[in-house]
Image (cartoon, rainbow over all chains, first blue to last red):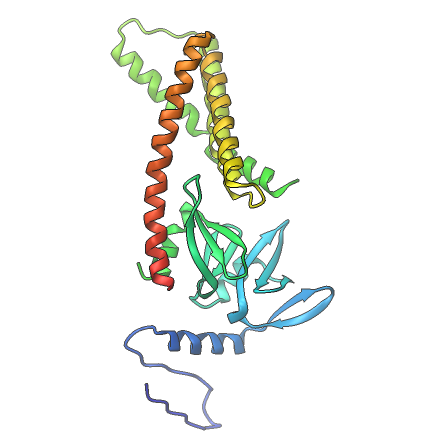
Length: 143
Length: 138
């Protein structure tokens, strides 16, 4: 892929990508741009931390509070889940009414004995794909 | 309130209404097939109330499998037992089967067989989906 950088202080800043398909590189650039535009602050032990989207495994709702889980930590957020859903890049997908998953942080999909489709994240946590969200998840995975 | 209890109630309330609908279809089929099919008002009420509760439990009990700190055998056993108790009470309460140990034993055997067939069918289908998904994320 060719790279062209144009420095022009008289124009609005924008990044335009021409690609044959959405590759990992395109997704990485997309995440970087979104990260730059979308400041996500998490709170742990009254300490505010700027979160990097690529390090987040999932966003979950518990007792009406939204949490972001990374590989090691869990942070409370001041966003609602629907607000995050609108702002997050396509590598994030809502898997049930109370969880948005980062596809890149999914370790594997598994089957529960009840027939639910389980999602095992790289941080060891587990959630499930609801029947309602199954179609969306399929589409996001390109199936 | 525990989040799993909340989820049980939520799922149960959403799907509870399907019980009476299915019962209605069964009554309708019976009325078409049996010329002198008759049913009293109390029996209709009992049927509607119990099938609503049955569907409520059936939908809610699926949350057992999302309780991470429960082991697989524990959640399976509790899932099975809860459904069996709910179905047995519903069938006996509506006198769809008599309260007779032999009949209940046959009912149990049929229940186990149907539970297994449904379980294996759903499991294979979801297993296939998870394989496809895993192939995409690797």
